[in-house]
Length: 347
Image (cartoon, rainbow, N blue to C red; front, side):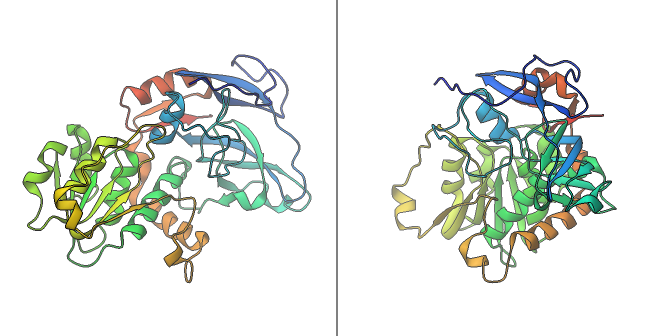
């Protein structure tokens, strides 16, 4: 499919900051497997807005690869409402986990100058967001770890939606960054965690993150407990893995779909065993709280839990590749080639 559209960039094809101190360097997706860095105008912050100078931002292997490969669905707007993203038509920006320092602020937020903050924003060296979108980074959290807050919060959300119960058996399909963090969060419950991942190095990391068993996906049925798994998480990004997850989940079990498959279709075997399984297959998406939690939980409460897991997990240990913002093409090539965790370093 051909995605085309405008995006208010100032022009240029990367390189240094050519347009003054208030300009930023932003990563643009310009076509299938085509990205470049462009200079963009950064406005003066007003009211409660803050101007952030970025230090690190994390690449989302799942969602951003869909955009890189032109596998996004035909939607005009993203569902997350991330500031600076807008339309998914090429050329467009994407990304939602950046950390940096507030270097200027509107008249209602002047006291925030000097704060380290995390924001939902595309990859960009300098940007303006509303004050409520700039979350203060705890003093005992390094920028490199804060840049992965969004992935940690996603893992916390998956755990909540799966509702692990003491003594249950849990399967996690896929050990990318979000899969490994999901393994780490879920393993804190008194449950048995089996992970399934084709890459040997990621299986090794899964054991470090708390998995009791780490095997290849082809071994899932062989090591499944009698009666199947109580919960299966599908976080691999592979449509085929969802069929595997359904296949090894037991009667009255729960399958939590954390992957977003974009415009790729999923084929499931829903005959035979599934027809009488009373199984529940649920979507899990971090941009909202499931209805059953809204009586006592807020996004702020969940975010606080995520910060505690950031401190405990130290997610920056999962970073395998770091690039400057002007190396965007190389960054996404590395991501598609299988790099576990890619970040942009703006220093």
